[in-house]
Length: 384
Image (cartoon, rainbow, N blue to C red; front, side, top):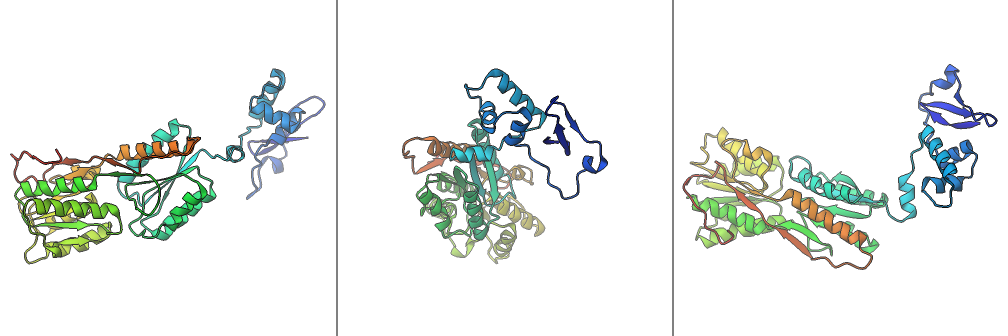
């Protein structure tokens, strides 16, 4: 009788002598093109050992009512037949897949991958798998990603929104179905879910204050789309610092746009081509700030003497581009770990769990050559 497949060959067993063998016929030793390899099942093990399917199942799961001899025979046959349990089917019986979904806007720099690493380390320790999808800064793709996550029966979702997202019905579905949801970094106020963010207001205030204390006066802000809370908070920090030090905010030098490098070059060209151009620019992220620095270099504008530049995020390349980009460091690993910790608490709590509405993590000003015009400066800020 047939006894599964070994190395793509049909395996047989003699019921009288319990001898296992494969045929040497070339037609049977070479699999046909496009043929599917047979996946060994509990039924194959049962046939090969001469016991019932239910006995095999109980033996594989270590039930006490199975004798050691039978269990050993089943386990040995499972190894011979290269049996791989269908964990997905087993988990679905328990209404649990032990899988967490995570959707991020992009992978173009290290920011989101570092958050993923932080979350993954904690989830793996807790016995969960992490399924990651990229929305590519596209709202329709984000919606499609959430539908795919639902179809795959994830136990919870971690998500950072795209710059296009201004409708949140696709997230409210998770709430209706009782699937835990945690938003991080790019969040909204229209979904009842815990949020993990950094203090964007404080970080932006420190960035602009640093420029002012280094002698810069006409400071422009290259921001992000205002539908995102992160962009609004960084704009608010910029305005607060300018107002505290009595600096005039020239509205034609405050630009809210998209996060792409292509847009950064368009906005940067506009600012650097102004007749009375700014002497410093605070950019919403490091990639935009680096584009500004490269464009200034092309135009022969000296950094930091003629133009100060500060970014936000502290991407690895920021330390290596000359003369080094001053930036605001975000605790990416901690964002990932906190988000994962919260989603696990929501999933594993047997009673309704009420988490804090928001976790706000601190940022850090990293000073490098792109803004250090006053090298003897000691910063004294209300934020420390």
